[in-house]
Length: 165
Image (cartoon, rainbow, N blue to C red; front, side):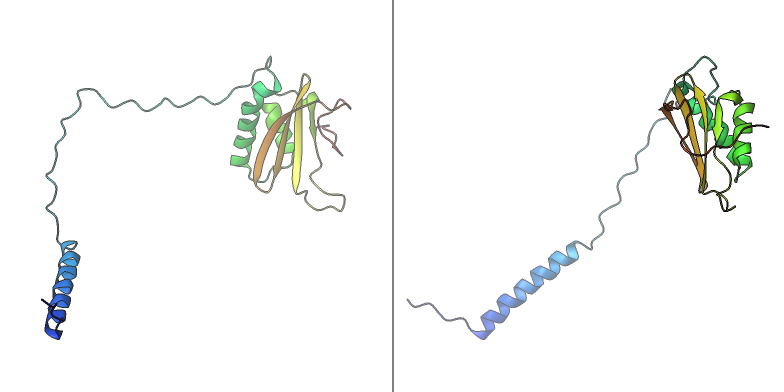
């Protein structure tokens, strides 16, 4: 027996069947599945966990190291900036003194450049033992670090201004 060559009619029937199967599969994705059954949960017999107690702000430790007091140093400056968004060097030093830091152990850079423009940043420091808490205020942000005292016995490099008020 010889194979019968496909006719136009049989090719069209196969093509139609394939198209119908493709359309059926495509439409199957459009059918909404039934909504899931609502679930009910029973109230827990235990109370929800209490929200964490607010943390107390850091405090100054006069016996502590520079590293021990860094969080408090940052806190004092953050409180100052919250009420005075553009502090000058004196404002920074006064805030730290009011916070308990030793004024005689502080340094601060000038508020102005040598050509009488506002300084882009003001550095300030407190020496505690053999380390320095060094702060930087500029561009609307404050940062701090703890570094060892320089061989000169100071904390800041470059020109500082006298703290004579």
